[in-house]
Image (cartoon, rainbow, N blue to C red; front, side, top):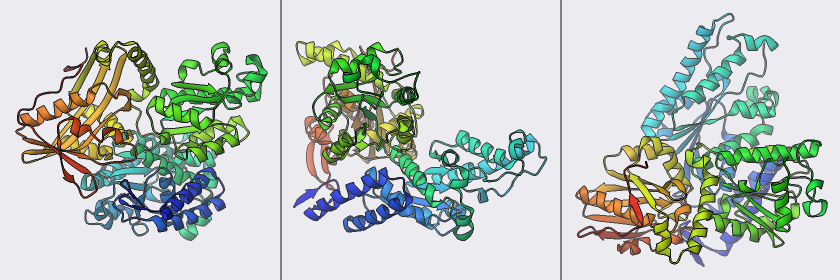
Length: 622
């Protein structure tokens, strides 16, 4: 019998069997588009979940609110979240009490103190519609009144009382129109009015409100299919059963993005995945990609979609069974290829098993296997990766390459809530890391290598303009992370504003470029003691002294505030063994185990001397 520190419970053979069954059920759940199969798999998941349910301490608290019925969404949403590694407890208030629950500070929902509130709006929430003939100004007043009610009154009030992040589902378009194709020219038309409201909701939403774009989802599937009046009149059900799957998948994807659980790298096969044909057999000029054939145009569209993902921060890599020269040739020789060799942060072309190549890519990029989406047209390769690397997310492809972008888009695995400057430069940062690695390999010794980097760092308390990136780093970092504490942006904002908190972020620059914000730390001051319960660093800057530079800053800042002791917390996970001895290396002394099985460490600041580092601390980068 093994004690699983991550779960805080004894881990038995029964648990292992349940975990295997859970993985299989969730894999099938994510792959199916059949509502009958989907609901059956949800029932199977619920039985497994009951066997392995815990005491709730590690569960994410979610409130699900709407003027419509939502009970049928609860189990599917919990199952979808489980596929991201998020265990959730969902609170659902009584039907059509959503306004009172959000505005009353003593409501059951407020007392639940959810970390996430899902608020699904519906057309019945519009109580003032434009009248026939209303002017543009008249319609604008009504639309702004609706948006002001839901954002500035209801959402802000609830967030102020609870600190909860809110996922706001906007409105699907009305399924019927009395003006037909003339509606686009009429400001008072109801379809135009709903479009206006949805745009205002997105434009005016504060940072803690994340849009669930129901208008977009219903457009993809068709409003007539999305909204079934029979279900509405009989059960006040806001979405048809057929469209329940995309609704819960996308909702789960947004929650996963908030907590850094979505993927950051796509590992791609080549033959019949990025182009039609087998380059080793057909030759460079025999493969199909680009203009001239329907198949070639479909593959080109997929490549362009991947390039768009790269531009917002998704890493691209290759794992192909091929001779490397053959695999590279299309990227180097074909003008019709949208993707070029330089667009990939890692390129594995060999005859070894695909799981070995994927694992090597993860090690090379220093990311977890659960951060990878694998895309391969070969069902046998997909099955092997699922079996060998269950953490990897495997996209189920069909035979038609024109469907590839849609399948990847609606997976929910690449959802994001913010695109930062670091995201836009992600591939370039990894390319710079390759240059750093080459320099390290050529250096006489490691100290010489660090000196040659000419590293400079800015370390400051949390600042408003960097809160998005700070939140992102907190929720995505797993390896160099002493507590793996996850925070919403609202919680980060509260931490930055707290008089009892000491916060810090580090931005690092060197010869090869700007690494961006790479480390975050925060702690709470109580009397003469600072307790650090948040400390993490990006995997891209391991072993370059940044942790010692951050330690110097934290302890010097603490000493200036009259603090005599700094307490550190290390909470062991499956991924953060790298920092198990960090506090010992910083001359802290271990002084016990906390209730949640974390180890506690303390250092007396009397006589503290800064650690030597090959990093120049500057006020700002010139």
